[in-house]
Length: 360
Image 1: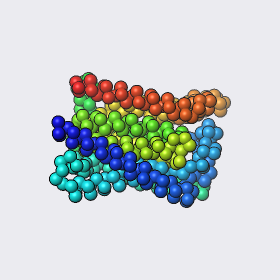
Image 2: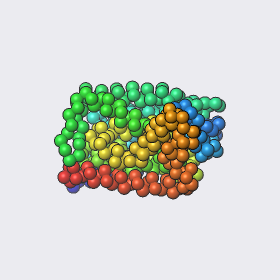
Image 3: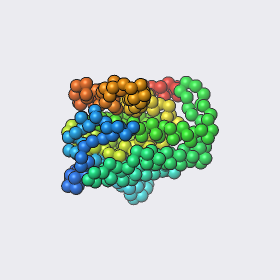
Image 4: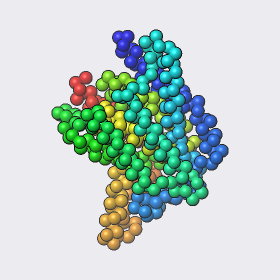
């Protein structure tokens, strides 16, 4: 029982500590983001195919330039500060077993932490380009290339160093795929990164990512990966801070520095727990977000090919899906709350699938 209690404390303390750290540093960060006007200087966006995103621009004509980007700094800065603080505590109180909170370990948390920081840095560079006068950020092709290169490196590490060659299939035998784990890792990374466009309404992205990371904290704990569980719980705590300040009207947007860091890190965590198959269940609204963009683009191309009018080329009034609901007249708060509810139910379903599969 003492060991179990110690493990629980090792998971919950980082989550609480990261929340406290985040709540402490966010007012200072917000002050400087507004002081240096860290927002896009002129509204407007183009779709993936280069055409003007009229629906998006109609909804965000004012909102895009009212709040700073780079709110994702709250997430990864809180993580770094919390990790350093816990390492110091663990170093100076080495004899108290329940206070050995240093969860950095080579086989569980070094890879997701490194991924988080690399994604954050690349995303921050993109945000800095965006907030320049006339800035548009890094080209999508460049960002996708970075995601591919990063995920290819990590996927190769999983295959060659960690010898991960099989995919766990719930209620079935593991599927041995060998080196194909590398391209699979790349595909999952790209899919998750594409879902980052869910950051489009105040509180939407935070409320979706919180239960997903909390789910993987529980799964990691049940697998005995206590260090990874602590890491996931810590990110959950920092996301709760972002959600606190992102309640309407949002103080800032998470930006690429948050989205790129979170989506790439989530891929790593899903593969480390050998439960990435649960991602489409828990992240059903992320799937819907990405799918609506792909469907809209495909429908547009099909319409152009057959000479349809501009209006008939739209499957949705706007993509991704949450913008469609906005243009249909659904209030922002209603869209956000329903996304939260669906994600909460979906994560519980994913956890039930995991528990039943393991016979727990």
